[in-house]
Length: 333
Ligand SMILES: NC(=O)c1ccc[n+]([C@@H]2O[C@H](COP(=O)([O-])OP(=O)(O)OC[C@H]3O[C@@H](n4cnc5c(N)ncnc54)[C@H](OP(=O)(O)O)[C@@H]3O)[C@@H](O)[C@H]2O)c1
Image (cartoon, rainbow, N blue to C red; front, side, top):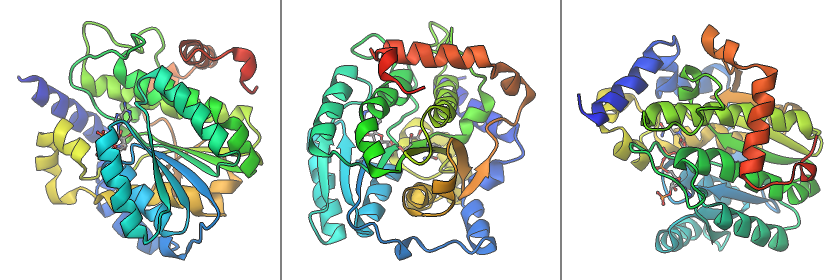
């Protein structure tokens, strides 16, 4: 069996193991938007709000940035590739009909780049209303960051944790600011692990991706326990299975199998934009995990629930903070 088929079969198998797979397809938002009479995204007015979106150069993140700018927000689009970012920012401004999007370059897997981004954003924006942690990828072969951290964990767990920490003053100044983490339903298959969070020689891309996504939803809950919800709310979410360049590259066979049932990137972006804009449920709760504007459990399997012990959570927070070079006394709680 090739490495690629192995990844596909793991992702599909993990999903089929759960009774939720059809809900992840475009059937989910089609049915729920009617049943729950979703507020149209176009009805939100985000004028005067400043919002940061990572991974804004492709797929779901690009659609989030476009939607937020279209609703009047000032959007800071973060991308890792200078030329690509410049092109996308031009496109986003053209779509919004005004210069409402600016670009900031940073590779979220490089802690020095994240630190520099945090310094620049704090200096330029004493008030930030929304931070969307969307950047992410499923990496087939084990790679390490400039700081010798496995790249999935570096770019989707440690880097975002550092950025969230650095932006706390600006987010709190928005009272309440909102931090939204784009996780994945793939995390349902993963136990909370610390010792093997960076997966070594036996690296399996899909499993490592799921571990990182599990760590994201755990940290989301922990942030919410530490920061009062009237200062900053924290949300994690699953966008569903959306047809994006990331899926085409990392999971071509999965894309072929699920085919027309995949969501559009805009459908994948819906709950992120809703969490960033709606004055109701997204502000009256913190630490939740969402799919299609509905709060979801973070465990569906007994073995992952068993793994989620208080001491393991504490160890995760401690490891991520130490690895990010954050002085624990700088952190809330
Ligand atoms: N699509 C789905 O079905 C699905 C399902 C569950 C969860 N998700 C999550 O949704 C998010 C968006 O995924 P997508 O499907 O839209 O993928 P995508 O089309 O590949 O977009 C991913 C974005 O993240 C950026 N990115 C990746 N690694 C980065 C890094 N180290 N530093 C900075 N930027 C980085 C990419 O930059 P480049 O443009 O330079 O590549 C791109 O802008 C991810 O967190 C993914 O895990 C997606």
